[in-house]
Structure formats: C-alpha cells, structure tokens
Amino acid sequence: MALTRRSGAVVVLLTGVVFSFGALFFRATDNVDAWQYLTFRGLGAFLAVTPVLLWNYRRDLGAVVRETSFSHVAAGALLGAMMISFIVSLSHADAAFVLLFQAVAPVGAAAFSWILLKERIERNAMVAAVAAVIGVVIMVSSGLDSGIGWALLVVMVIPIGFGLYSTLIRSAPSADPMVPVVIAAIVTMATGMLVSLSGPGLDVSTHDMMIGLFAGSALIGLPLPFFNHAQKVVPAPDATLLLLSEVVLGPVWVWLAFSEVPAARTLIGGAVIFSAVIWLTTQSRDAVPEPHTSRG
Image (cartoon, rainbow, N blue to C red; front, side):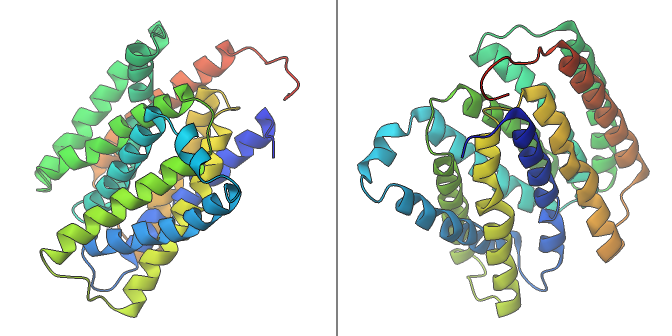
C-alpha cells in the first residue's frame, strides 16, 4: 500500500506511541535479567515478521537476497545493537534517563548525513548540537552521581545508532522494509541466548517469557516495518518531531505503573536536549518545501 506524506506521518507518530511501552513491559517482568529478556524479545520479533516476509516472497525467495543491500544488513545489525543497548541500559538506569538520551538522535542523524550523504550541516543544526551536548553533560553528571558509570556508554549507543540507522534506511535502495527487522531480531535473539547460556541459562517463568515474546512481536516486529516504509515519504524533520512521542510517553507509563521518579538533573538535561530538538525540527520543517508529486 502506497503511503502519502500525511498517512506516513500518522504511521510514524503511532510507531513512537507503540515504542513508548518498551520500558514498561521490561519493568513488568518478575525475575529475568536483561539477556534472558532479550532472547525472548528477539524471538518474538522474529516470529512476528519472518512468516510475513516469507509469504510476500513465496514465489521467489531468492529475491529477498537479491534486493537486500549492504545498507539493509548494516541497518539491521545496528538496530539489533540498539535493541540490546536499550534493555541493558534499563537494567542499570531509570526509564526517563534512557529515553531522554534518545532525543539526541536527530543531532547524530545530521552528523551521519553529512559524513555519508555529503549533506551540508546547517547553522541551526550546529546550534542545536551545542545545546544538546550541554544537556548530555548535565544528564551524564546525574548518571555518574547515581553510580551507573560504564552503563553511560551503553546508553549512548542508542542515539548514535539511531542517527546512523535513519541515514542508512534513507540512503538504501528500495527493498522490503521487513528485512532489517528480521536481521535485528536474529542479532538480538542470538546475542541474548549466547550470554544467557554462559550465565544464568534460559529457565525463566512463563510470565516473563510471555512478556518478552509479546514485547518483541507487538512493540518491534509489527510497528518497525511500517516505520521503515513511512520514512521513505516523511521528511526527516517531521519524522524526528513525531517520534518524540516515545520520549515523552515512555517515562510517563513507567511513572504511573511503578512510581519510578527520575533525578532532577536527568529532567533538566533532558529538557535542554528536548528543547533543542524541537527548535531544530520546527526550523527544519519551515525550510522543507511541500512536495509536488502524485503521492501528495
């Protein structure tokens, strides 16, 4: 189904809303570590997407390989790394800290677009980048005081990785948007399984296993292909603004369900980053001309 710019924007917005429940589901588990949870989360995403991909190419399975470029493989592996980083980060830091850090992603996207696509970085982007760095410094100081230390490096994989992921998806040749999701699911499942089997094993409760499977299928496997497809018709500034629905709503769900209150400096630093991204996005949207194509 062909998406227009308007319908694509709705898809991106709803994708952000669905993503926002990720931290809530992980917090709802009883007795499972990050790697066990990742194993079943990756499996859930794999089971949700792979059958649909195989059905779409049932007449020519070889076409999946022929249409998949290096960019798709790299994007899938990177997405898997972000999925792993997200859950591992949540096991060491509060949801607001992890999610607000993701708001730096547009700055990373601008940097990678400049490096990989030779797109010029506008003055507004540079101003927003400086403001975002200030916000990151404030948040990092909060993280160091709370003792999460090395986990800060894990958290930073998410915004940097998402910036590169968005650039790869935009620059990649046309292919089935489910391909990167399948690759990401395999990376997540395999990594989680290897680490778990070398440690606590995979003996988890049915409750925790079902949460992991559901989170993987409903929060990753189903919405991500639509998001990948929508990115082709929604301008990057609009997509950035719409995806902030995850950053805004994610900490709210965890606060309402588990009374998880973030540190004051986390909120201050996040507010600085959030303001910079909104300002940059609105400035960029004003500069994006309305397309005059058959797709609207």
